[in-house]
Image (tube, rainbow, N blue to C red; front, side):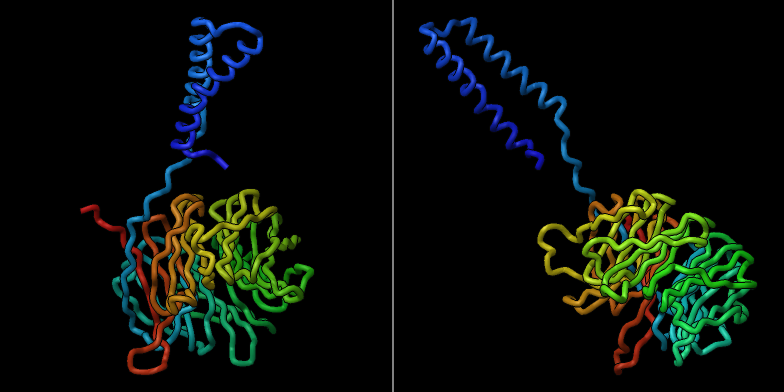
Length: 384
């Protein structure tokens, strides 16, 4: 543990007379008196030592200041369904999906959200747009079967591409051609032709996969639940999913989402306030603490995470203690997480860059127990 500057100063002050006393005792034991030269020499040696310590001692990094971001409510044309997935290609154009086949779109940064016809009534869990025209979303019907829908006109029309016998939870497209979808029963579906054909990839396990992220066409990660241990699991590939390697971070709770800023630096979040970080492409994972040493009882459920770069990151979910949604923000790569109270329950978020972001979820309607769509937008504070 590194000593504080105040503690080091006190030690330095005490060490000078202590050193002189030791030298005097040594001289007395030898039957000699402490000379002025010995006194001055001891004083210079000790002082020089502490000057060098002060010069080269590593000082602790100052704690970062809280980010100057506030979250504001945005409204849409369809407020009757929970929103579960979100994708933005830039600071203006984005899409949100949710229950009963709900698809919303914005072209002005969320100032207005318009309902689109998905042609489906399934629960839509996630959406991914590779550009402003090409998008994909995954959903599940009441029988527990999954489906992948695609658009080539920015969401104006959607067509079914493939179905799955298992639930589908998440989808990612690192470019316009390559995509992956994951779900229950260790389901991993992959495409290399804009979704024209999908094929099953094998992980070799029995896990339920809840989140997936690819940094490029070869480096990818999927997270979820190891059903045999009821613990978190991370799958890693460096060859586009031809082979997957399973890793089980020690003590990890079930994981719900994963985000990589580049092929080396990534974060995974999940139940009981779990936040894991890796700096070696997912080979090893370390836990990050939320809220400092007094947060022992702070164990929220985190549904989504995103890092547009290695320093700036966000995670959203639900705070059981406060009984409301939660937003976590870091500006130092997760070294410090700042907590912002949210509303309802937040399931997804998107930050196309470090200053523009949105989070979606649901909250109870004021007049009853029905759920309504919830959209929050991040706005940077003015210094004044």
